[in-house]
Image 1 (cartoon, rainbow, N blue to C red):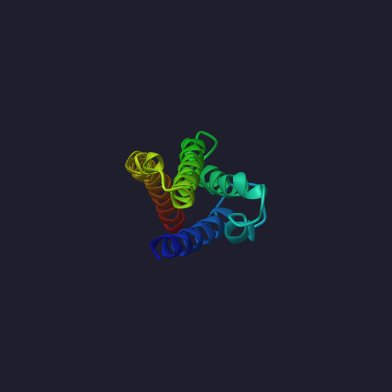
Image 2 (cartoon, rainbow, N blue to C red):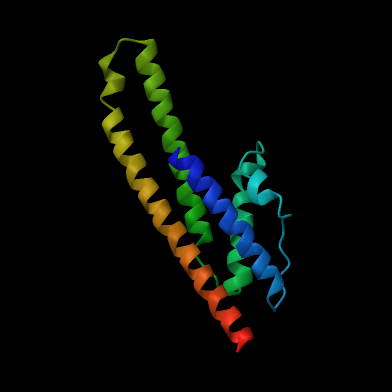
Length: 144
């Protein structure tokens, strides 16, 4: 439930941030249609890079060409997915065979997944905070 809520909140924020980035000068050409904010995560094959492109474009449109961090966030995100799949494979292997060998890997994989998730979350929060701060500053400057 936490992941579903985080996904919905993240996509809502990303959509609003993109609309604001498109409305504020200077204009930035986004590489992907806004529909990919939601659908890019689920489309087979392209879900390995479309979400990254959407986040990177919003980040660059707001911060400028010097925006850094989206690539690192996406690398950590994909690594987290790989570890989650490894955990699934280990659990399935343990269920199919009564070997305790598979069970000995689980604490290490779970700890790795927790650490990767924390690192990914920290990078995401950094991007969100940077985009939000820059957008607030740009709106305030236009209002003044």
